[in-house]
Image (cartoon, rainbow, N blue to C red; front, top):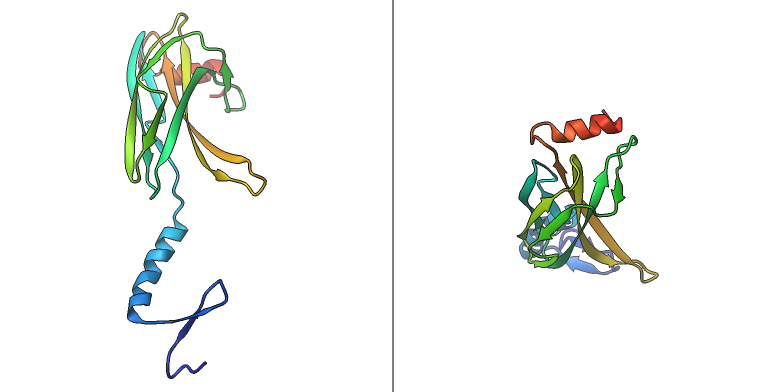
Length: 168
């Protein structure tokens, strides 16, 4: 290979490619896409409500391929180690949909209504997405929580539950 005639770029497949101005313009775009991790986002991650709770959360897809987001929910109890524990559902939860296709660079909003029999209570919504498969054929699933804390008064509800659990 002669450096005075052309500069060659060694590809991972073992071939060579001439560096032209067209090819050089594509390289920064490829590097930008390869270095950024694309996964679902959820906002807000935490909500606080009083007796009758109506709210919503948004699942966003910053990636270039669509995915299906599935929502599951259960009662939630903070634990001393800070991880939390899922409990059987004792609250009445109404949600507008439990799954949705989220288009590339798009978002979907899930609306809910919660009524708890015993206060304080917490409900955890898990937004799940299958991201691929392992070499053995197992599906890889990512789950991101949205936690709703429900108390007599809306203010400092989460702090009160975490203090009672011994986390704070």
